[in-house]
Structure formats: structure tokens, C-alpha cells
Length: 171
Image 1 (cartoon, rainbow, N blue to C red):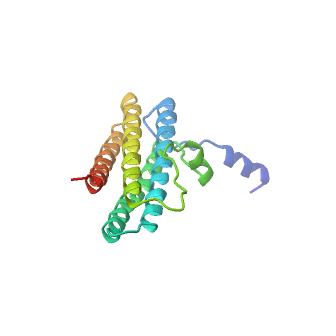
Image 2: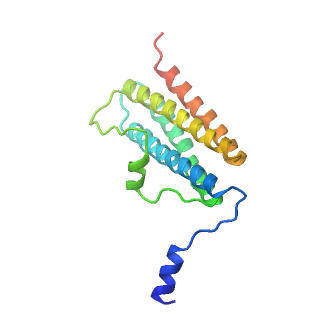
Image 3: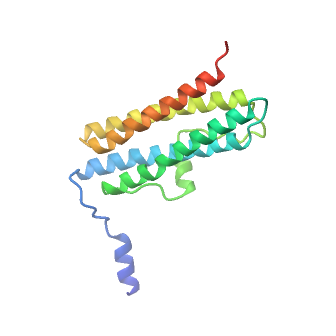
């Protein structure tokens, strides 16, 4: 293959077959890309807090956050592959994630267990709102398959939020 042929292939459109129009593919894949960045950010933060948990409820909180992190990470491949299935692209690097995410980082040397759980509860609420917005984009373009996936992810995020809320609620 010549250098010119390689350049042409690199610049060629993906041309993935889809019934969705080009505007729909662009809008939905952009929304999924932002959602994926938020999911990765929440995953890393959840694992960070999991690794740095301490205190009298260590075991319970440590296991809760590990379970939640696994659930969050499981979404990543589905989101990225859905964007690709419809003919779009998605994130390509950690830098790309950093540019489009809405979930804030927490690089503090020490965070109390209660503050960790409260922050994750708020982040899950933010993620749920982002998923609802992405669902609306899918609805606008008649993409019921992506909308259906998002509905399940919303339910999972609401469950995580509920668990985090109940864990930190004062009697």
C-alpha cells in the first residue's frame, strides 16, 4: 500500500450502514461521546473513593463502591459500541474525556467517607440528568434502540443514587 493510499483510507468516511440520517448520527454520537466521558469520569472517581475509603464502615463502603464501579464500567463498552453501530465515532483518549466530561474530579489527599458518598450521590444525579438529555436527542431522531439502552442505565444510576443516599442518611 502506498503512502497516498494509506492517507486516503485514513480520511475515508466510516460509511457504517444505518437508517438514521447524517444529522441524527452526528447528534446522537456526540451526545453518546459526552455521556461516555462522564461515565469514565464517574468510574474513576468511584474507584478512587473505593481505594481511599477508611473508617469504621470501611468494608461495607468499600464493597458498595466496588459494586457500583463495576456497574458503571460495564456501560462504557455499550455506549462506545452503540455510537459506532450507528455510524458515529466516540472518545479517543483521556484528553478527549477531560475536554467533554461534566463530572468533576476530586484529587484531594483525604476525603471523609461521608463526603465521598455524598459526592458520588450528586455525581450520579448529574449523570442521570445527562442520560435524560441524551435520551431526548435519541427521541428527536427516532433512535429507539439507543433510547432503550439509556432507560436501563437511568434505572441503574437511580439505584446507585438511592443506595448512596440511604447509606449517608442520618436517623
